[in-house]
Structure formats: structure tokens, C-alpha cells
Image (cartoon, rainbow, N blue to C red; front, side):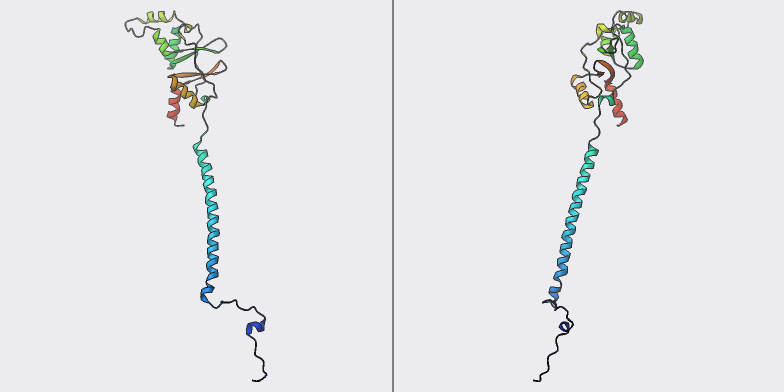
Length: 206
């Protein structure tokens, strides 16, 4: 052989890096892209899972707010313009008020406006002659003109405050078969809650 030296490989001659082992193998060339796609999918899946969790929490908060409307109190439904009589008022006067204003319960208050009793339409009928159709009106007026609210009123009266929960007030009326509940602040009469108030509330669809 001659003393001539072998020419180095082109890559080595240019100072470039040697190709990685197996770079010429097609099977090996496909490994890296597949690994990258797998990693990208896993990262995307984790991001989506976090997004779903955040959306679920937000939806739960929204559902909670939607499903829990503000709790109603007695003041939201009660009638605050209340007709009332004094203990010394005659039943004939009370009867006229009930018929004129189409109401069935009449609170009785003292001179300070404090609740001292309640007269219902049933109390009035019990002490009138309305069931006797042949009795002239002037005789019935005379009978009712001799009795006062103090004579027939219920003195122990269940009452609630304006801030009482409306459900609790409704339960009291239901359990005791009350047609109404006077509303007081202390002893001062400030309103009345009746069955008609609940009917109006449902009719409004609030």
C-alpha cells in the first residue's frame, strides 16, 4: 500500500456532530413524534379536566343561588292597613265593618293601639240571630247593639312579628286551624296575616 492517508468522513471533516445511533432506522425515527403526541395529549387532557372541574364548581354555585331564593318574612305578605275596633264597640258596628270590607277577622285594640283580643265572623254569627230568617233586622240590630266586642272576643290571641319566617307563620296557622294571625311589634298591632293573603300571593305567581 502507498503512504496516502484516508480522507475523513464529510461530517467529521466539517466538524458537525455524528448522527445518532440508529438514526437511519425508520422504526426509531417514528418514536419521538409518537412520544411528543402522547405527552401533548396528556397535557391537554389534564388542562381539560381542570377546566371541567372549574366549570362544574361555577355551575354548582349558580345552581345554589338559583335554588335558594330569598326567604320571605311575614312583612312581605301581611296586610298592614288593618281595621280594628275597641273593646267597647258594639257588635252591630263590628258587623257593619266586616260586611263592608269583606273581611272575617277583626282585631280589638286598646286606646294605645295594643292588641287585646280578636273577634271573628264566627263569633259574630254565634251571637246574632242570623240563622233565624223570620227575625226582623231591627230585632237583630237590637241584639247586636247590646253586646260589645269585649263580650265575645278571644283574649288569648296567637301573634307573630313582622320578621317571623313566613313558613313558620303558615305552619302555626295550619297546625291550629287559624284563619289569621295578628302581627305585632311588642303589643302594638302593625298588621294581620290571613288565608286570603296567601291566596293572593299564589295568584300573583311570585
